Length: 121
Image (cartoon, rainbow, N blue to C red; front, side, top):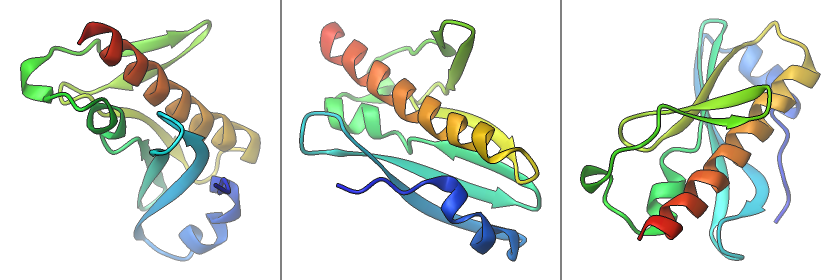
C-alpha cells in the first residue's frame, strides 16, 4: 500500500474552493484494512478525519459506545466525535511539515482508537 502525502495534493486543492478526497496513509488496522484519511476543503479550511474507519474496522456500533473527546500523544492530541470519528482541522496556508504532522496524527489517532475498541469488546 502506497501512502499519499497531503502536501502532494495541495496544488489540486488550492485551485478549488470546495473539495473532498481520500488519502491512503500507507498503514492498516489489521494488516489488511487500510487507514484512510478523508480531507474536506472549504475555502482555506481543511478538515482531516479517519471517516469513522477505526469504528468500522473494529466492527462495533458507535451507538453502543461512548468515546473520549480526544486522544493524547504527549504534547499533541486528536479530537474524537461522539460517533467515533477521529479528526483535526488545518488551513491551506500552514507549512507542509505541519500538514504532514496533522495527517500522521489522524492516522495515529485512528489506530489508537481501533486498538482501544478491540480491547473494550
